[in-house]
Image (cartoon, rainbow, N blue to C red):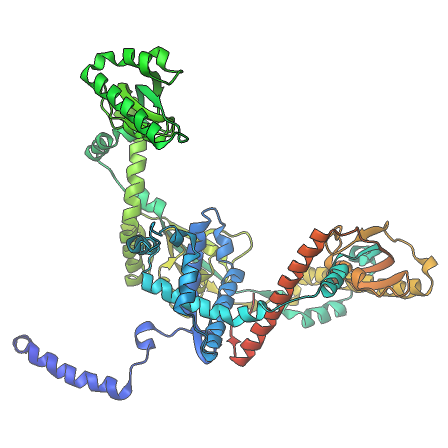
Length: 633
C-alpha cells in the first residue's frame, strides 16, 4: 500500500488539498492556531495588548537600554516596576494612535522634510549643492536595521501622534501674576517646631493577652501565610560557557600570530623625516602663493635629481628656522604629531623617498623620509595567552547563536530532564531551594528574572515537572529550569507563628498608643500653648529645603492655616507614630531677581502644560475605554 501511495503521490497531495482547504474556508483559522493563546493584559479602543506583545516590547526596550548603558543593573530592567512601566507606555502609545486616527491628524510631506532636516546625523549628509546623499542616508538607516521608507513612516506616525497632546501642552500660558503667586506659595518659608511620639516609647504600655493575639491573628491571616515554594534545578547558557567549550589548535594560533603581528606588537610606527618649507600663510595673495609654490616645485625637482643634496639645500632654502640648521631634520614622530597633510605624505612613502610638493596651513613642503622605526614584534610565546583569549572571544560571539539554538531545542525535546543539555554542552546543573513566584530580596541572576520565575511556576512545569522553555535573559544569556519539588501556599497555624503574631501586634498597638497620646497633646496644646513640652528646636522649612522633615510633616507645616499664629497640626506617621507641628511664623523670602522670575515663569508654564497634558491623557483613556488587567506592583 505504501508503494502505491509513493507512485501516486501527486494524486494524493491533490486529494488532501481538496479535503483540507474547504475546512479552513468554512470554519476559519484562529490566529492562536499558529501563535498559541496569549492572555490579554490591556485593552485600548477594543484592541487587545497581549502578554506576548508586552514581553516582546519589554525585551526590545531592555536590549536598547543595555546597549546604551552597558553598566546598567539588569535587575532594574527586569523588575516588576520596569515591566509595568513598559505596559503603561504601550497603552499610552495606543491611546494616542487611536486619538490621532479619530481626529484625522496627519503629517504633511513638508513637515516631515523639515523634521528630517533638523536631525543632525541626516543634516550632515547634505551635499554642497544642498541635495541629500541618498546612499549615505540609506546606509545610515541600514546600520540601525531600517529602510528609509520604514523610518519615514515611523517618524510620520510619531509626529501625527505627537499632535494629539502637543496641541494641548503647547497652548499653556501663565500671566506674571499667576506665576508669581504660584512661586510665592512654592518658595514660602515657615519656622516650625515638631514634637514626636514614637511607638517604641509606648511598647511597655501595650497589654498583651491570648484573646488579643487570637483576634489579631484572625484579622490578619494573610500576614501569616507561607508562600508557595519550589526546589528547582536550572542550567544557564552564556557567552562564558560557550567560550570555555572552545578548543584551539596550535596551527590556528600560529596563523593568527602571523596575520596580526603588527597589532600584537602594540605601540605605533614612527617615521623620521626632513623637510624644506617655503612659507605661504593663508593671508598671502593668490599671486604670492603661486610664486611660493613654484619655488617649492623647483626645490623638489632639484633634490629629486640629487637626493644626497637634500640636507644642504634645506640649510640654504628652508624657511623653517627650527629645522633648517639641522638640514631639515625633524627627528622621529608618530601619527598625530604633524598636520594631516604632512603626516599623510610622510607615512605613505618608503625610506629614502622624496615627496612632491605638499601644501599645508604653513605653506609648501618638500619631504624626505630618512628612517622608519617599527614597533618590536613580541615572540609567539609572549603573546600566546592573548591570542588564545582573542580567538576564543571572537569564536564565542559567532558560535553563541548556534549553541543557543541547540540549547533551546534540547531542553524542549528532552523536557523531562536537564541532564541531556548539561552533558551535550558541558554546562553546570545548579540547584536552589525556597524559590518563590516573585523574586526574593537580594537574589541575583536568573532567579531574579520575572519571566523565568513565571515559566517555573506555570501549571505544566509544576504538575509534570517538565523543563521550561529556554528563557532569553538578554546579554547573550539563556536559562532553562524545572521544578523538582513543589509546596503550595498554606496558612500557618497560630501556634506556629505566635512570636511573630505578638511582635506585629505590639508594633501595631504601640503605634496606636503613640497616635492617641499625640492627639490628646494636640488638643491640650491648642487650648493652652504654655503646656507644650518636648518640642524640638525651631527650624525653617520650605518646599525646596525640607531640612530632612518627612513628607507628611512638611506638607502639614506648609498647608496649615496661618490666620492665627502659632498654628498647630497633627500628623499621623503610620507605623512610625505621630507628630505635632507648631508653625511659629512665616519667614520672609529672599529678594528674587528678574532673571529668576523669568526662569520661574517658564518652569511654571512647562509644569502647567504637563499637568494639562496629563489631564487630557486621562480623559482620552476614558474615551477609548482603557483597561489594564494587570495590577500595579
